[in-house]
Length: 319
Image (cartoon, rainbow, N blue to C red; front, side, top):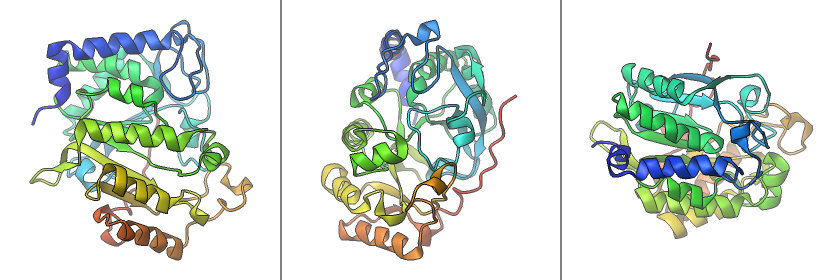
């Protein structure tokens, strides 16, 4: 099954998306923040990123969900900076601090994609891609012309504009979004992401419209589709029941869900009461019960062993 972006390259859809994305950078409105600064003139807004994407690291990642990592790893590119600012972010050293990572040209990003393919990776896994989506599209075209032929994974924190997700229709085959919060006030308090639930839900619905449910092949790898991540937070700050109800009613009871238990109070979490501790077994079991309540049985939970791989991945910066 060939990636959709090859058809988008042939029929001009990719070129159109590249053109639209670049224009949006002139008065940046590619995420819900709509900072309206000219990133092509190196002005920076919330994400602190100008005209070039910054890459912190890339590697064959064996710690993602099994259908994404497979046996040879997921070709993961960790972008510096983010359009969210989670006070507990485990990647805070490069997501929220300046000077961590290296600005790359579109050509250089394309070479990274091709190198990961040459390493045998099953896919190109774009981590925190929202704020550099136009640059990714430009790099993708170059990579296609040099032989890229493995699918893209759009691995996002979920603070997206649905109209920007629509721009990726026919280009991205695999969506891996977080559904982090059901409460907008908590999203703003913990991640500086006002309006998160509405933007997130509309975007996830659009992802599902484009690619449908996860299609797992005979080798256990995902070819196309949606896998939803939900990080269970202490004190039910993530609003698990509301999110599971939304998935069951608005997406599908057959949706694939990665119910993540590995929350650790990194970065500034120790300064916030309620979020300054690990998850308890009882809290995680309550989240599992929510999945069961709404008939959601596809995916990965602690019991199935699919989560142990997520923690402790050694991410080394690119030179």
